[in-house]
Image 1 (cartoon, chains in turn yellow, brown, cyan, purple):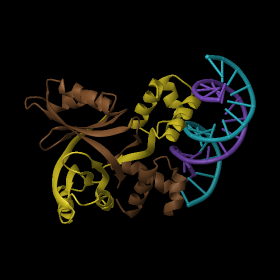
Image 2: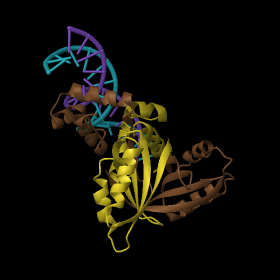
Image 3: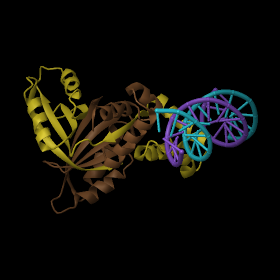
Image 4: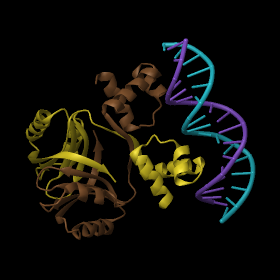
Length: 137
Length: 137
DNA sequence: TATGAAAGACTAACTAA
DNA sequence: TTAGTTAGTCTTTCATA
């Protein structure tokens, strides 16, 4: 992981379809070098995957979920990851145990999702934050 | 947004470099249809961007930041988005105002980042959660 | 939906550190 | 031995009909 790797990642984070040739021009190297480095970073797991950011609805939100002490949070996480509005699920340290990142049609859909979460026996409480703006690092 | 769109998105979410021809085969349509739909979803903003998920360090964490009331959180967000460990920055509703998602080499690097945040005049307090596991919805 | 041209990615052989 | 370069080939994309 040197500075050239970081430059390549910064370009790909903003648009992962940027051609190797264009990346090479912008960072001042050859297409082959960019390709070799991207492949190396994939092998090493530095690049976990090529993906996309979507906004199918009008609301993005974080839902912090407290899970009962005697419950395996992994099982709860897996279940919630299946819900269609859920983009990803984090198991976290701290006051709450699980954080959902959701992309929902509207506030009503967020509410439905929270209700659905609270109806699970394993869930003690939830705290929701709307995501008002996202900036890429 | 019909079922075909959702199928295309599901494939691209797992690997956004999947060729249109392969997606077409898997969902049972033509390359042109897939391409047109992806372009339409880009235009509509359903696909926000093609990006990648990285893990450059060993630690992922969420840092919830409270900002002083008289401060424009956008300015603080922009500044923090520049920090190399920061993957993205959300402005959120709720108790805290800004959430950083960071990917750092180790706990010491997370600590340095928190210190750096707390040294800003605009920052009142921070609360950090380690991300122990991530699951894709 | 089909097809050909253009763009991009991949292979492999080579060079340099 | 590892990283980088380059030329030739193959694949994908894109525009047009």
